Image 1 (cartoon, rainbow, N blue to C red):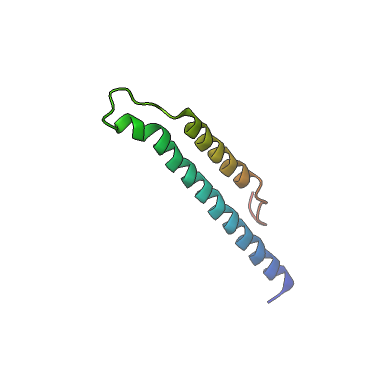
Image 2: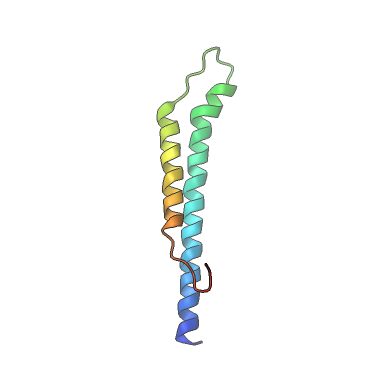
Length: 79
């Protein structure tokens, strides 16, 4: 295997790890959002208490996941 081919495979492998990390962080943010907003709304409590700190955390995690994806280097041959 040539050095160029190895470098391309390493770049693809790194990009896949970055995408997996970003997806995991985004999924954690979605679960936290559900716990902070959706769960209190569907509970049988007459006055649901929305947890704004959990919603802020979930938005922060989503933004981190988006920034990680945007910082990922482009693979060769892609625009």
